Length: 254
Image (tube, rainbow, N blue to C red; front, side, top):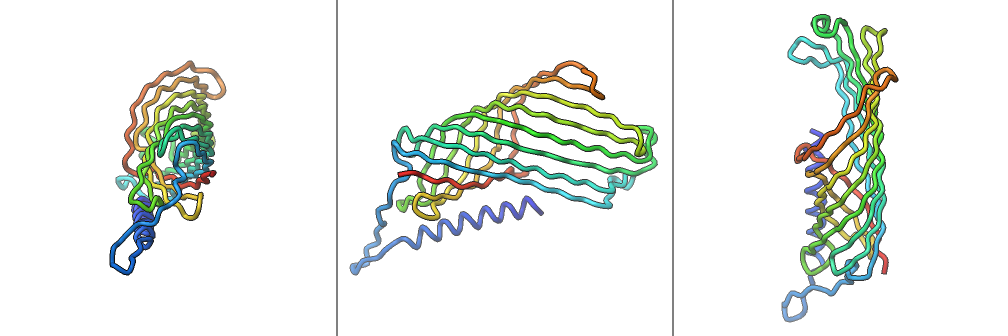
């Protein structure tokens, strides 16, 4: 349901943007339709600053998995924030950088007799907390939709470095606790398509998502604060569904 709401919100914004563009058409006395000339805020030599945020929340209570495991509660939240800037090296093409921070927290509470056969416990809970800091740079291409120059589609291709800390905490029968800590570094190339609409002069609203990411990750892990070695992983991720939708604002300088 949440993904459908986000998708419908996305479609509404696109529809409103197109309607706003259509209203800018003017008719002279001869009935000839023409487009007004708009200032090009995406021309060579211009610059902009931007801010974006992403979010995701989930909460489930008193559910059952295959009628065997009672899920007392599933609760998760995820937030991402980023700030960046771009400089246009040619019309509709900009290079820039971005700094971001994200936080993720998820908790499961389970209760079932079948757990005794699997993990020697009647009730079990696990939680994961992750924080991540990243920075990178790349290129952003814009394609105007119509002559009004208010509605654009774009794609960002960025190279990112990130550092993250992930803590998992498993509790068995409300007494025995197991903790694991991962310290990870990663390098990734990410593709982020989206749409942008100028709300007013120089001020724009953006939607984007990141469906494709190619990355390499390395790090170390500890168990109950005792080092357990290192890890290396390379992955190509495709995450078209559910949508990871981000929204943000940009200001374009004269």
